[in-house]
Image (cartoon, rainbow, N blue to C red; front, side, top):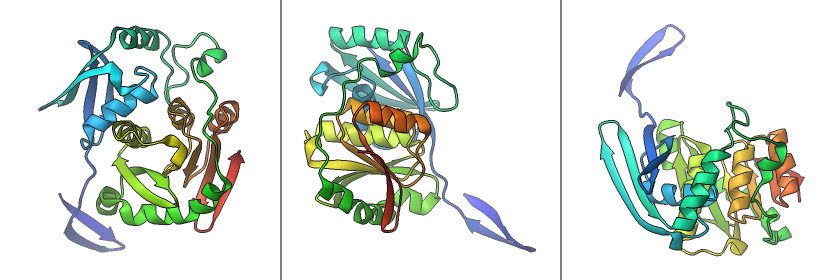
Length: 252
């Protein structure tokens, strides 16, 4: 879009690229479960990743069909899932946990925050830690949407120090869901690598990684106190402030 850029007393007309944000409705067996504000790309892997990271699906074999429809209001993803998964969905709706900014909505006790989340069993190699700076350096050159708009987060999968998959979205948790959906779709082994992200480390990212048995999460920005506590409880290695050749290891 055309914008006016101001610098001191000088104004110039120029073309600016804006990151897209659309409502994406996730529908399971005819019931609308959530409407997420997301960048409308890679919607199929996003829906799969969300379903897995939120514990609705145990694996993609429980997803029988997926249909994407776009209209003037946004995007609808209509999924048919197994009866076991549908029962899990109903339980998930009953005990839904809030996201950053809305508190821990809908839970009866703090113990429920860790409900159905087994400790991460993926072994984290010390070699992975040494690969973090190189992986972070690769993030910048691989972020096409962010390069144009400056408004997207990225989540990437790193194997042997190299980024092998990267997804972007206006929401950090959406970017991670897209990545997790891709890993599941491609049947990639979580024991082979780790996740790097351009965002801060908040508790929902820890939950999603733990749900998928990711052993190491490395983020460019700061972690929250709850993210650190959850990572400790779930045996997930968390590295943050990953900038240049340095990073801070909060859990191991």
